[in-house]
Each structure stands twice: as C-alpha cells, then as structure tokens.
Length: 257
Image 1 (tube, rainbow, N blue to C red):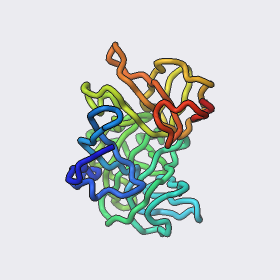
Image 2: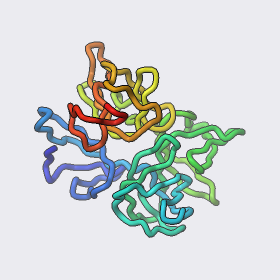
Image 3: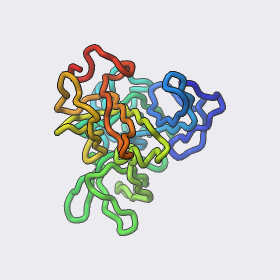
Image 4: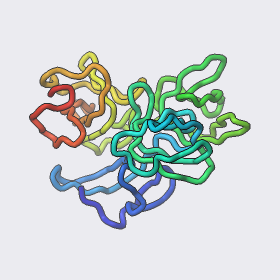
C-alpha cells in the first residue's frame, strides 16, 4: 500500500503523522484505488491498553491497567518492564480476553486507556480484565459490548471520564461509513453457525457469502477476514485466511482451508 510521507495520523487521540508510527503497532487504515494499487488516505494508531504496569509475569508477559498482556513471538519495543512503569500496548485481544502484544513502548504517566469487553461484577460494579470500576449515570457502559474507556486512578480506583463503543469490533461498517465497499480486518476470529465472530465477547458478527472450503475453526484463531458489501448493503465474509497470506490464496489456510 502506498502513502504520502506527509500523511497525517491519529495517534489514538493525539495528532501526528505517518513518521510517528513504529513497526509492530496496530493501525486502522482507510484507502482508495484499485486493489493492486491502494493508497492510504487516513491512518489511526490503535492501542489495546495504555497505563501502568502492575505486575510482571516472569518472561511471558505483564499486567497493565488490569489487562493480561502476553509477549507474542516477534514482539517489538521493550520487554524489560517493571511494576510502576507506564506503557502503551499494541496488539490483539485473544478469545480469553488476554492481549497478544505486538509492540510495547514506554509512555509518561497520566490518563489510562483500555479497549475491551466489560463484564458485570455485581452491585453496580463492572470489570474489564482485572480493572474494576462503577457504572456512571453519565458515562454508561454496556456489559458485553466492545468499548473504549479512558480515565485516571484516584486512590487506586479507576475513575472513568470517557466511554465510547469500539466500532471497529462492534460495527465496522458503521465505523467506516456507507462509501466503503471492502473491509479487511486482522483479529482473533471464530466461526459458528455459519457466521464470523470478531474478537472477545459480543463483537461484530458477519454472515458468509459462501461456505468456507475445508470447514472452519471452532475456537477463535488469529486470521484475516475479508468483508465485501453485498447487494442488500450489508457486509458478508468472502474470505478467511492466515496472516501473511495473499488474497485468493488456495493452499492450506487458517483452519485447513
């Protein structure tokens, strides 16, 4: 994919440029042009969690702002983080809610950012990973739906100041608007009852334009999902392939197809 060296980039809420991006970071790209000559028009950096390191789990990972972070093979950035450090984590949520980190970078202390699916904890409490907080009458969080939360720690308690639906996982067609004809997403993807399910929890589910050859994986696995707009205006999955495979790959792909 081509892009202008001066292309602006949204650095998860902060203005920047493509020059600020680093290998291993997760980005959302909007592009136009022919399939073999795409040109990026908008770029947005996407952190899965950004906050304090609370615990180190040996050589395998960390707990950051209540989220289990695992060092994925080939992860970029640093690994030698200790409790009290503040970091930004790029990666993908797995089926169990843990984050397979593709890059971790140091950041300054401040506001906490977490993406994920909140669960009920009883008596008005919610939990996202091990991060617990109270539902607010102003900033309402719907359990079971992908959300973006930001806030700060106050006496060890996470105080929300912003809640948004994470449209990339909840409704990507709405995230990109009616002018988009094709959406390609890399995520942990499951297939059940003839539908593709994104990420962890009650995220976006898409029908299949045709049966996947060779069957389909039951448990969510990392893959690339190709969605195309159909004649009724809705998106359906047209291809599911392993990361790194080119579109139209005919060999053994994700789940044996």
